[in-house]
Amino acid sequence: MACTCQKLRQLSRSITHYYDAELKKAGLKTTQYMLLSEILGLQPVSLRGLARAMHVEQSTLSRNLRPLKMAGWIEVATGLDGRSKNVTVTPLGRAKQLEGNRRWLVAQQNFNSLLSAERAADLNALADNYMEVLPALP
Image 1 (tube, rainbow, N blue to C red):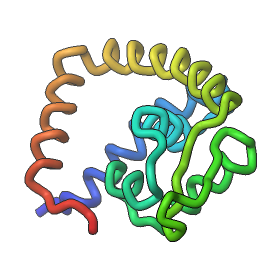
Image 2 (cartoon, rainbow, N blue to C red):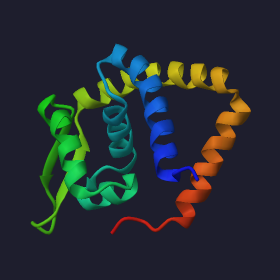
Image 3 (cartoon, rainbow, N blue to C red):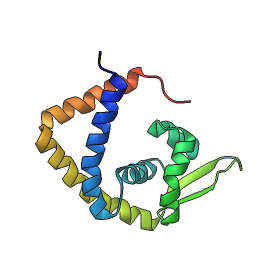
Image 4 (cartoon, rainbow, N blue to C red):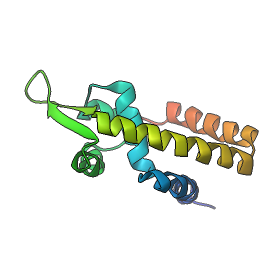
């Protein structure tokens, strides 16, 4: 019997590699582009809220945010309660995300052509359906 986890990780790596090749032209990795986009949509957002929204552990999120902070694309500041941290995208990060968005659109269109728009939509719907069933990270 095939291991579902292994199959999904292989598929994920293959798709990520495809998008990374295009986003590299904007100086971004897929994870960086997704983080910038997610933060822009939620900001200001706490680290905990961002981790929950992206279905990742906070320690993983912190590691992934470090290069964005070093590049000046995001700011991490103390939240209103003094204990939490809020993340926002800087103007430089907004410009980088817009540049990445143009490359992402090319990757998306090419991927849809390769797979077919219908099969890509089916894949997205399948992922959405399973994300609703699987428990969220704490």
